[in-house]
Image (cartoon, rainbow, N blue to C red; front, top):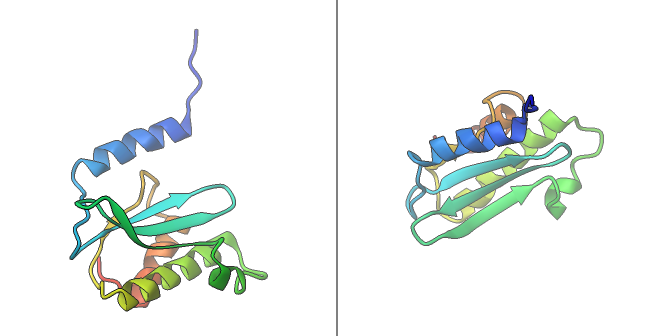
Length: 122
């Protein structure tokens, strides 16, 4: 029987491979990205203590107010800017970017560029 190609399983497999080499520390946390069909989520994670330092998404109150009339790519850039502001307020400037197994283009790239514009270094 022919198995159907599953994009999400392939993404998860890529993410497992990436996670073997990427680890967030308190000084340089991991900027994790998750993308669904409607929303995009980003969080800074300290893997040594296993906790989330700051997070942002298209569902956050301060981001939702600005989403009127924006495309999903522009919304992702807005989330990147928001997570960068929150990270700098928390005293974090350098992060390790974890694209979550997604290809680095489109919404994931827009989020990364938005974060870089507002001062995060990776």
